[in-house]
Length: 503
Image 1 (cartoon, rainbow, N blue to C red):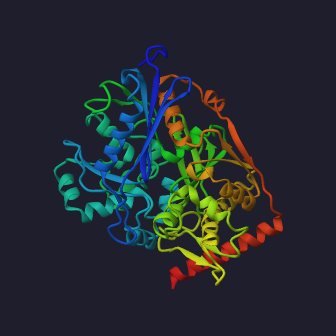
Image 2 (spheres, rainbow, N blue to C red):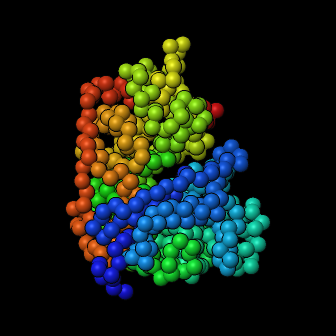
């Protein structure tokens, strides 16, 4: 299918995230036309469980699209891009499109026992070799195994041949297309524990090891290309093509124009996710990072990435706001943290949903250390921000060991990257330059780029590379000795968390 730039004017990006949904409308010259965002409720039915209502998600998609299209003719939307929270797993009826239960969120820890059983069977090397992933409740496959055993609605739908399972992108494609397709793409599929990186498909052996039926998974399309067209979607006319889909962190990698091998970005959202473009071949980590598909522009052209995952970043600030009630708005944390010149030795380990890379400890819990009678809210707020940066520093250390060379610079984005105190501390503790772009919501921008590539608006990644513009450069301001001492306090605190988890 061929699209001419003069026929339609806009690209719509749907960014379905962990705490809310946003929509971005741009014209084909990358001018922002409209943006909108809506938060939705998080459900925590048991300790360690995190769920989303799929109808809440769908409603926020409707609301944000309605908002960004209210002053334009939606018939002039050329293409739609989707980006999404990745490992969150959804179940719905393929005939009626009705949810069969809440989505099990990527932060959810309910499958810890399943994961420990798989590890006890010695299966982690098998999964890492085939999928690039480690065995952890974070990934989608064990969520599917758990739901098929524990949710009668899911069991009944599977037996009746009505079960559709997939990551959030698959659910949205299904809803946007009126159920015409059950589809995903490689950046999302590679997060399931069921996708073989070499074969580039969902694999029967991997599914068998997890006790998950192969047939529940969607068909895999390239990340850029036509997935479906809109049909019966309340806020859009029929026939608009969905031409780009990427998991949120891979979308941010593309949105940051990290299209060359060796370029890297870190997105500070609900979690923090550091990805490095490793080119046409998957690079497997020896230091407990994960290998993932970055994108597949067609069925042959795959690009891979090395990734480190921090489960709690911006979510820690939300916890300070909603749990500790130190602040009324998340943006206030920087001012509170700046009310003191340092954390005065207070260290916070943000293991509120376990620890991700490179520790992979789902049983770990959060911890403040170094608290004295002189500690107050400012010290604790500063320690929370520093805890986010410390986790990223651990990932960089592992990545440098894998690559055998130091990282010289890194692009940063996401809501929390607007926090100058956090970004300066991150640069200090890493000893590298951080480059912040003018447009921080690079996840949505990546979805725009993927949709534009799929629609033929751009034909070459170099065209995307030339769009990147710097807002601010952060350079290290502390000595190597101070960096070493500061990191030592962090590793002592993490050691206490890991020891406590084993006690």
